[in-house]
Image 1 (tube, rainbow, N blue to C red):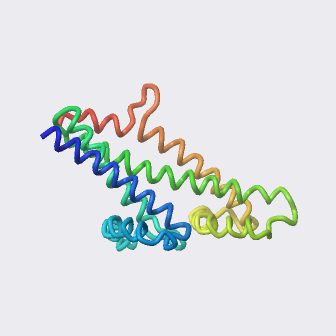
Image 2: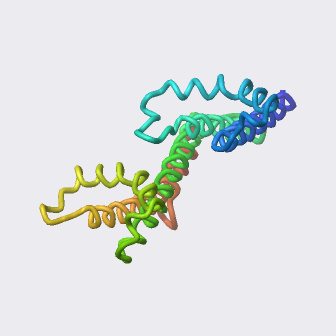
Image 3: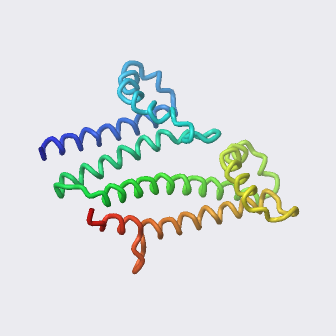
Length: 201
């Protein structure tokens, strides 16, 4: 039984790498690879399609379904590893694994938008460069988040896009730090993951 679980663990691990490879290749010109690309898509697309059907994983220009697909496999890997190492899995450990994987996905998105927001703020200090194509592309990515912040936090009629962009950057940074503290804990504070892992059931 233990050997079967180990084999399954390594198969899942290889599949995670294959899906990640397929996603990265998809950004370029994958069809030029010919038959190898067809084999990769035949092996990965049926699984990825399960998540691409979920509309809530899409927001404007962004499709987060590949991230969700990988996170589900990561949770399965964590649970298999636990089963191989300890011979049993508790409900608390399952919940802790799901929470940790979900936070990892959210953390990645928060960090991504934080970096894009900081990049968008760079030209604000230099007149005449904010209209460059690079900054327009960066603005296309961060603008939906800034607009959401503008709807939630109404700072007054005199407040412009720049102030809301800076507020967005601040909120993203606070969310990253506070979320990490709540999920993982620091010092005497026990995070949610550790609390769930310690459940006896």
